[in-house]
Amino acid sequence: MNNRRPEYLVPALIAGAVAGVFSGIPFVNCLCCLWIIGGAMLAAHMLAKNTPGPLTAGDGAIVGALTGIVAATVDALMSVPLRPINEAFVRRFMESLARVAGQLPPGLQDLMQRRTSTGFSLAGFFLGLFLSAAIFAVLGVLGGVIGISLFGRKKTPAPPPPATQGPTDATV
Image (cartoon, rainbow, N blue to C red; front, side, top):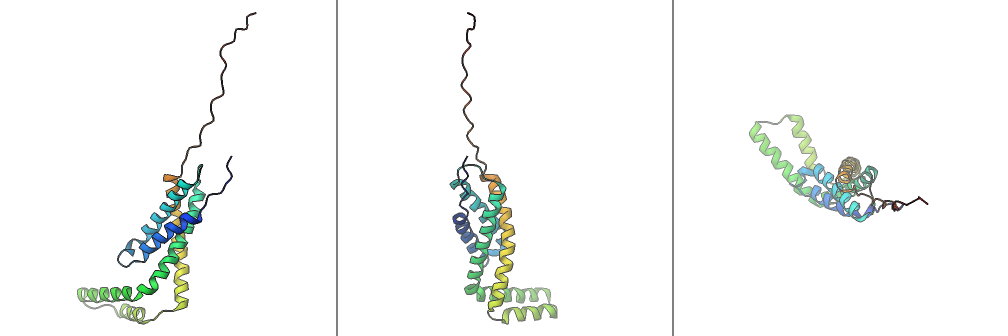
């Protein structure tokens, strides 16, 4: 029996980087939950392809959680240089919403003013990274389990049937 553990890290790094990039790109990140689930499914597929023997749902959960954590890290690192673009998009969206709806509620206006006027905060960065990593890890577990159920069921080769002997003539 093969007791070798699967290699989780390489598929998680590759698929997590892909999912994190797609989650961090403005206008594409509206599907960020699906990117994470899809990235974890990709990691499960890569794990199944490179691992001899059957995989369990636990293997999918591990590679999916690692994929989610990697994706959250890549997403957070991409958000730093793209922050002005995202803030400008949110500001324009709220202005167009105000034109269509008439007047925004004062609480929402204050919130948007604070949101777009604050600069980069290291504490806010790490808090956002921690929260994203927790959420993305849960979504990654879901995607990893789904991916293993789709790609990880390898049939172990059945042992050959025992050799049968022909009828013996026991009449002596």
